Image (cartoon, rainbow, N blue to C red; front, side, top):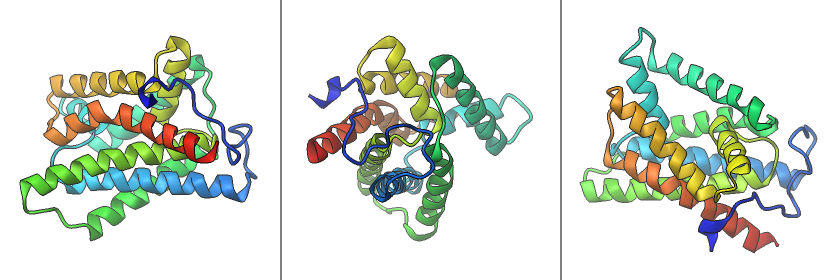
Length: 215
């Protein structure tokens, strides 16, 4: 059952180590493909107008209590999360850099070209699709083993020390973040809750599908 997955699968196109700046073409392709899906999902959640992601809610909540912009807070949160990698033994790589670039690009493209549905039911459907897309994209790029983004690296590190399933670790992480953000005054929507509770199982599903297709 995919909800019980505890480790990132290794397939024939996985890199042997994160510090690999000359990966196989197939590894690089799946890294970029996974990150493109990830960014597409993040963008779709924004245009669905059903609520921001948990980490955005946290940034908004903090910004309401300190004299800094949401963008600055988001950057500082990323730096803070990356600093937590040190005791967890996580290492950055090419994927860590491309994570920021590709996801930001896809979010901008979604906002520019994807219209927000006028019907609320269609907005909810779009939000659900967005969470599934982020999860599957996350699963694909993580299997490439070229370095995770800040949140995914934190998830992997916490899984290693807790030995809990990846789906559970990610769910606890996202729910904790959105709870703190909401307490600080951040705005929570149904899309936010769908993401917080659904992203863990969806990432696990992405890992499961990659493992089944390529092993």
